[in-house]
Image 1 (cartoon, rainbow, N blue to C red):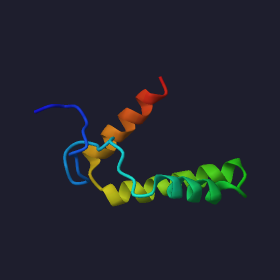
Image 2 (cartoon, rainbow, N blue to C red):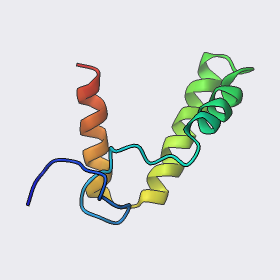
Image 3 (cartoon, rainbow, N blue to C red):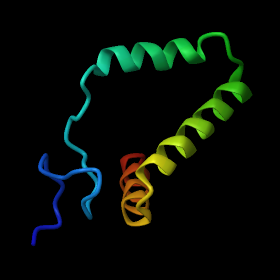
Image 4 (cartoon, rainbow, N blue to C red):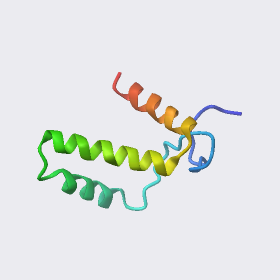
Length: 77
């Protein structure tokens, strides 16, 4: 079994899906930036934290969430 990420991964699989999976990426990005537009830095950070927790709850799989944390952390290095 390969440990790489591919587009055949699904929400309930044992690996994080890092392949493009948006039905409307531009629309989501516009909505995300609009949600932040009138916020100061602290409010924006709280909005991001709430969004992350809501999406983590939706995913629900701690293995996938840990993998997402690892991948996101490595992207900054």
